[in-house]
Each structure stands twice: as C-alpha cells, then as structure tokens.
Length: 128
Image 1 (cartoon, one colour):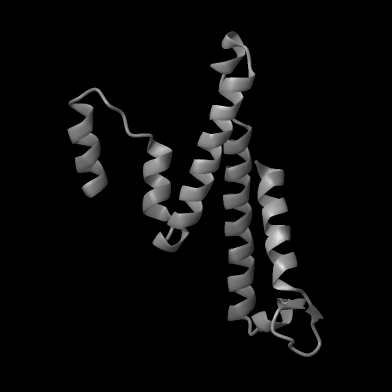
Image 2 (tube, one colour):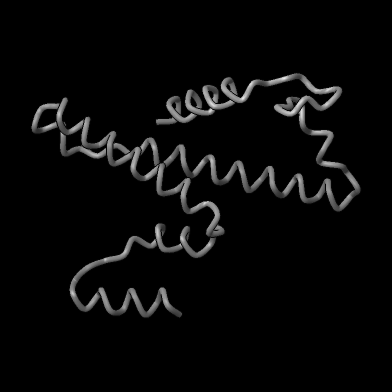
C-alpha cells in the first residue's frame, strides 16, 4: 500500500520510481539492506570513474553487466536456499555443509579471519 501511494505521489511530479528497486526493497529482508547499499555505492563509484576515464561519447553509454550479474546472484541464492530448505525438511543437518572454521572446530579446516576477509574482498572485486 505504501509503495503504491509513493508511486502515485511522485508520478504527479513526473518522477518515476524504478519498479525493480521497489520490488527488491519489498521482497528482500531488511537485513540485506546494508549489502545492497554498499553494492549501490560501489556501482556509483565505478560509474564515476568510468565517466572520468572515457571520452565524452563513450562516457554516457550505460553498461548493464552488473545488473545481469546481480540478477544471477539473487536467482542462484534463491535456488540454493530452496534446495537447502528441502534438505532441512528432509532431516539434513546444515552443520555438515561447513568445511572451514575460524573458531577451531574439530574436523574442519582452519581459516584465519584475515584470509576470510581478503577472499570476500577479492570476490566482490571480481564481480564489480
């Protein structure tokens, strides 16, 4: 109701709310909001760098590879969540999925927290 009302109010001013942004904001839990914010800021920074490094004709051409990558990540995550949910309903323990540990659990490979952070940053950089 709030989304429809907001769209109605801003449409009177000839402003359009992107439907996908509105849908993602309603569909995904609030706990993912910070990740989406950081991703949006990274994209904004990337576009600003691109505008500075390209010629004037190329600078205004938008590329949408990151939107495709983000859609794939969201779809893949939803699919894996569905598979995991079916496994949990069937009695599967999610503790068996963990291969690494930062707290020294027995039977799992140790992974220093610094390495975990570096790998996360490399993963984010590879997507960007």
